Length: 140
Image (cartoon, rainbow, N blue to C red; front, side, top):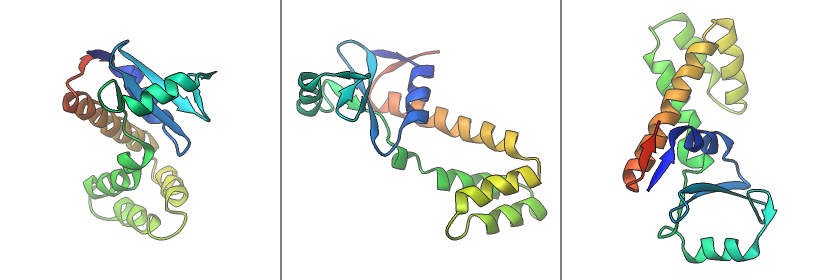
């Protein structure tokens, strides 16, 4: 089994509450399930197959909540030098509205590019770990 790393990364980035992705082990492709549709087409038989062949034939990709972007933000903050930006970002992620405040503070300290690189690296590691866990070869 093999998959292109970029396809896994796109699926991880697109994962949401109502959108799930599965790796079809027979056809070696990623399937998107949204609103009862597979890759944008109505296919109730395939959805039933996915439910029945869960893990064996159709391996679920990590979901939005499996990736824990809040934890990524915490780790990013703790990797910063102590002081100004670290303190401000740490305060920003406390309480309701943490994601919005965090992003606002990134711009205050011109750290947005550094954050997105860090976040992308985390997602890539999640993708690689997922592939390794299920014995899927990565095509770069």
